[in-house]
Image (cartoon, rainbow over all chains, first blue to last red; front, side):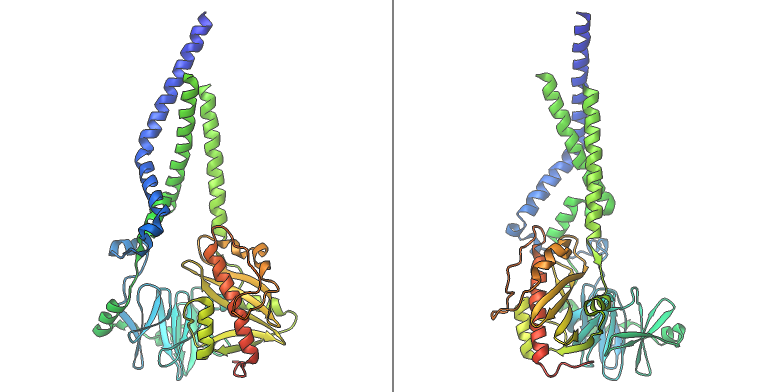
Length: 255
Length: 187
C-alpha cells in the first residue's frame, strides 16, 4: 500500500515536472515560433505575394548586408570616367558595361585598352568603354590583387608587395623587376565623380537593394544575424522537439 | 520515468545538433573554386599542350548565343583552348544569383567532359558531382540549338541545372563556330 502511494506520488511529481518544463519551453519559444510560422507562410507563397519584386534599399539595411552605397568617386582615364555603382556593375561615362563586384580597386589605360580591377576580376575594355573580356581568379588572376598600374604601355598587377606583369593577349603573368613601390606610386587615384554622372547613376542604376524575399528568408533562417542567428534558430528547432516530447510524456502519464 | 524521458530528449537534441552541424559544414564545402582554368586545360589536353585561341563574337554569333542562354551575352571575345578537333571552354553562367564557372570539353561537336570549376551559390552545389555531370557525355547540339539528350534535374538545384545545360549548349555552339570561323586565331 505504502509502495503504491509512493509510486503515485512519483508519477504526480513527474507530471508536474513535465508540465513545468513544457510551460517554460512554450513560453520562451512562442513568440519566435509565431514569427517562424508567419515568415514560413510568406516564403511558401512568395511568388504569389511577389516578395522578390519588392526591393528594399535603406542605408542601414545595405550596410548591414555589407553592400556598398552608390559611387561618388571614379577613375579618370583620358576622357573617360570609370566607376562602380555600389552593386555589381561597372560604369563608363554613364553606361553600364559589365558585371563588377565592389570594390573597384583600380583602373588604368594602355594605348588601345582600358582596364578595371574589381574584386572578382580584371575587366578588359576597349578605349570606347566596350567590355572585351574578364580575367578572373579561375583564369589565374592572383587572389587579393588590389593594384593595377600601366607603365610604358605595360600592365602590372600587385598583390601586397608582389608585382607581376600581365599580358592581355595571352592572359599570362610574368615576374617583373619593377619595384612595387614604383607601381603603387604611379597608380591612378580616385577622384570625385562629376555631378552630372552622379545624377545619371542615381537615375539609371537600380543600385544596391535587397529583395523582401531575401530579407524574410534570412530572418527565417537566422542568417540575418550571422552565425549566432543560425544557431539560435537551430536551438529553437531543438526546443520545439523537446516541447513535443514533454507534451507527449505528460499525455502518456495522464492516461 | 520522467528523468528517463529528459535523458532521451537530451540525447535526441544532441544528435540533432550534431546532424545540423554536419549538414552545415557539408553545405559550406559545396562552395568554392575547385580547379583553376589553367589546371583544367592542362588536365584536359595532357600530355599535349593546347593552343590558346579567341573566338570573336560577331553580331550573328552574339544573337544566337543570347538565344541559347536566354539573355544578352557580354564581351567581344571568348577565350578557349584547342588541340586538333578538341576544344576546352571555360564559361560562366548565373545559377540563381552568383556565377557558376563551368569547363566544357568538346571534340568533333560532341561533349567529352563537363566540370564545375567554381560554384558560388549557397545551394545547388550537387551539380558538381560526376554522377550529374556525366549525363552530358556524348551530347551534341540539335538543329534547334538544344542538347541532344535529356538531362535529369536535381531537386533543389533547378536553376544550377539550367545554368549547366545552357553552358553545355553554348560551348557546343561556340565550338562549331570556332571550327568554321576563319577569324578564330591565336591571341
